[in-house]
Length: 338
Image: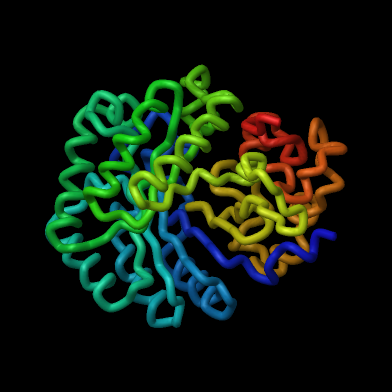
């Protein structure tokens, strides 16, 4: 049953090239800040890019930490393009974007329509954004966005992490996304992991997540911009659910991440590892990891998923969130409102 729905190779891969970050965000699941003691060397990352380039990986994402702090980021990007990887993305808080970096981005985006920037913006004001990311960082992020706008660089997406203190600010962030010509807005729930454990009381409830999903569908039509708030549980909003069209999260089906120390992660929001690239065959694990096989088998789902007619579509919802909250990836998505 499971083999019908996952790809023979991950289509999206993220390399978290460093744990180093210039911010100390309250919600960071990695508790990023200082670099780890045994982060991957440049040579190991180049070798990893070599391996990825031999497979049908559609997009390679460079993340962190803050990837702009890695001295070899642009060497990695150049090499990935040289090796034939068609789509490259960077996840950044945008506070470090300066004229020189903006010009590099412009060069990449001018040479390929497959260079994408994912920008974090968690509120439309300094008060809201900086509550998570620290004083002064809203201004710095907007300065980065202004430079992108100056050079006519379109972000692929504006990412907003929602919680109980900013949930009413979604529409304003959508307006920002339109102003800065972003292709998408991506709405992500606060994940209770890393530093976010200290603010767990601000995690939204299933009913608020449902309300958010409904609002985002309305705003998408109103502002003519795609808003990705469509986690696997969004199928519950559809009047006519197609039980023959699964919409699983990417964990185990499309995505693999590589941590700064080389751990192979089925989901970027948890520390669940299926191996390490220093010792293990990445793509052999994709096919044969007991953990991934377990995740792909929906009959292993527990809790209220047992007997639920929709599990064949959502396949349990977000596996990473279930693992983070319950320490069990086979329990239901904590934000499922059914």
